[in-house]
Amino acid sequence: MALDEAAFENAYRAHAARLRAVAFDILRDRDGAEDVVHGALLRVWSTGAYRPERGPLLPYLIACVRREALDGLRGSKRRHLREVRAGMDAPRAVDETAALDPIEARRVARALECIPDVQRDVIVRAYYGYRTLAEVAQDTNLPLGTVKSRLSAGLRRLHTELTEGLR
Amino acid sequence: MNHLDDDAELYALGLTDRDRNAEIEAHITDCADCRARVIAAEAAAAALAATLPPVPAAARRQTWWPALATAAAVVFAATAAVQGSASYTARAELERTDVALTAIASSHFGHTTLTSEPGVVAKALYARDGAWCYVVVTGAPRGAHVVLRRGAATRDAGTLDAGGAATLFVRAPGHPDEISIIADNHVVAHGAPVY
Image (cartoon, rainbow over all chains, first blue to last red; front, top):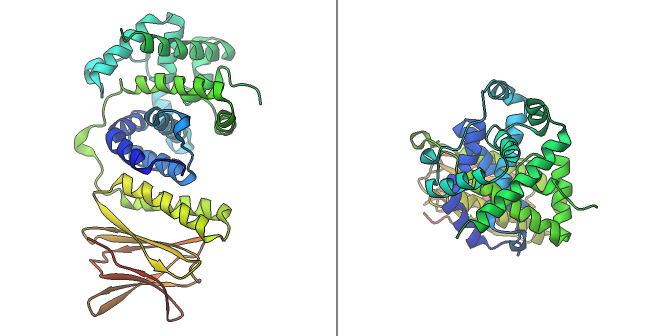
């Protein structure tokens, strides 16, 4: 058996709001977000792709939903949204008070403050601005390789801050 | 394949393309080090997701079913190509998808596996309020019908579409006592919904 069905169902019920929020923030379209969440879950279930050794379920699902939603955003049908986003000013900062999970958001905001500016900058552009690697490189006048290595190092540093910052 | 290096984090952030994603997923099945790195990266990315604003509550969609039915049909179409004729494989596919559908909105609909002939796997998903019924069958003879019975009254709900997993979406079936799949005047599957 590829997955624990009851665990999966419980996870969905408990975390559907977060999955929807991930998709909605990217697509700005409620129906589209709902479809993305359903589509990602159906794909995961129907292929039996998830196994416990793959890691905790929620982060895995969040990553799946984000990939799926970004695919939607980058498809031709949503190109206009991309144009709108391309015209946005500076990447937005974390608004803890408006967050889905304000307590966790506060912890994350603090952790983000602890990582080097150059790493935080590319993470914020890519994560909250939904820019592609090439777009981040263009926006920052950095070589693509530098963008990649800063994103990678930044996310690893963020993980360290979050796991060691529990004290 | 080489280790993922930076792509582990880029993958977790949704910044790698589809082809690369497939390679990464294959690699981490076998490589425990890279898998651990992806898991850590996904944990950090999930923490970032907690900072997002919730979907505005008032406008949650009410009628999600048609899109979901389409998604399920797509899944079946995709899996039908690789599942071959072995009925146990078809059954596994049906059960997995059924779990998905049930989990997505278990408060809204019920599901039942129809008793069927060898080689046929049939499931019905149905809204408890009688608004719709969705029948999915693998191994059914071409042109098989879905027939609903309530008391002494029967209704031919239509013909299953063609394909490895044949489907039929029935609007407003009400609350039939029995759902049957009939081909050449012969019952190949039947079952009773529980409302």
